[in-house]
Image (cartoon, rainbow, N blue to C red; front, side, top):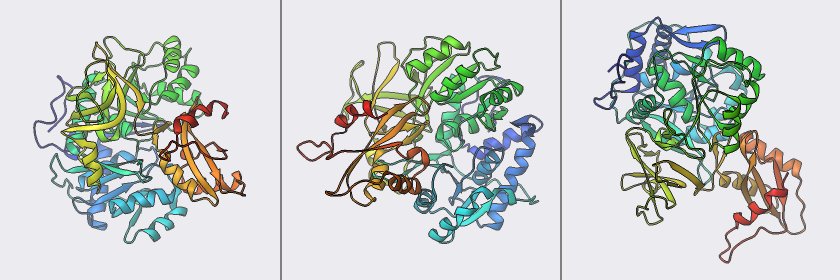
Length: 508
C-alpha cells in the first residue's frame, strides 16, 4: 500500500500493511527525491532503499536473523539510523532503539530482557562492548560502518500489521525498564493521525534535533517523514546555536518537533533571524507557560503543545494548528484516538473532574514484553491507563495536572526515582533514600536525592557520585544529595515525598 500526497492521506489501517512494505513503496515511487540532509551531504530515497536492502540481506544471510528475532539499534543521530531501522524490519525482525546515554549495565539489561540476537552500533562504543558480549551469551555485535555492498534479491519478509515491530524500553517504577510492544499497526496508525493534525504537505521538511531513539522522534521525526517522502533535516550538532540555525535555514526545514527546553534556546538565539519554519511542536515533557509565552513574544512561528507516551506509539493529543490553542493544555485527541478520565476504581469521571488519563485507539501498544501482570494492570477494559492525572474542560481541551507514577522528565526522557533509589541503597551505609524532581531551566527537571546514613557514619559525596555515574546514565544522576537525620515517614512507614518536596526550595 502506498502513501500519497495527491489527496487526503490514504487510510493505513484498511489492509494488512506493514512499516517496511510502506517504506519500500515510498522509496520506489520517490527514488530521486532527497530523503536526508546531513550537513553538506544529501541522500536520496533510492540510496536509502539500497542501504536498507543491504542491511536486510546482511542480517538474514550473515547473522541468521529470523522473523520475530530482536535486534538492538544503539546509534546516535545519523543518516544510517533510518536504513538500519527499516533493514531490521525488512528482515522481519523487531527493532529495539536504545538510548545512547545509557551505561553498559543498563543496555545489558534491555538486551538480556528482550533476548536480542544482534546489536548494531558504532566504533565509538567498541571499548565498552566487551561488557555486553560477556554478559549476554550469543550476542552478535555489528559495527554500523563495516557493512559493504551485498548484492542480491530484495528482502521483504512477510509480516502482519498486528505483528510486533518495535520494542521501546521505558523506565520502570520497579527499578527496571519495561519493553513497550508496538506493532506495525500501532505505529502506522499514529503516523497517519499525526500527519492529519500537522497538515503535512509535500513541500514540508522535518527537522530532527532530538535523539532518534526517543519514541516521540522515532514516530514523528523518522517514520512519518520516511513514509511520506518528506526530506529529513538531521541537525548534526546543537552547539553553537548559530551553526544549528544556519543549518536549519540552509536546508529549509519547515516542521520542528522538540522538547520545551529547546524552544527556550531557539527563541533566544533566533528572535531576530527569519526562519523557514511553519510549525513547532512541543512534546516529551510538559510545556511551561513561561517558555510558551517567551516563544510567542519573540517568534512568529506557532508553537503547539501535545501529549503522548511510548505505550501509545506515542502521540495522543495536540493543540490544533488552525483554531484555539490553549495555554497549559495538551489540546485534543488526534484522529482515531480517544481519551477519558477514570477514578481509582476504573469508573468514568464527568467533564471537569480530575482523575487518571486513559487512552484508547489503534495506537495503543500490545503490552509489555514478558510482563503479563504489568500489562494487565496497564491495559484494562480496552483502555491504556497512563498513570497521568488530568481533566478535560468544557471546550474539549485536555489538561495534565500531575503524574501518578512519581515520574520525572529530564530533557524529555522519562526518569523514575525508584531506579535511582535502588542504586543509592547499594552505596555503603546509606540507610534510607528517596528521589524527587526539582525544576531546572535547562533540563525541565532534575533529580534531587535525600538520604539518611547509618548511625555513626558520614557520607562521602564524591564517592557516592562516582558510584552513581558508574551505574546510571548521566541525566539520571542527581545533581545534589542532601543528608537528613531521618527521612519523613507516615504511620505505615512510607516515605513522605510531599514533605521532601517542601525542602527542595533551599536545594540550590
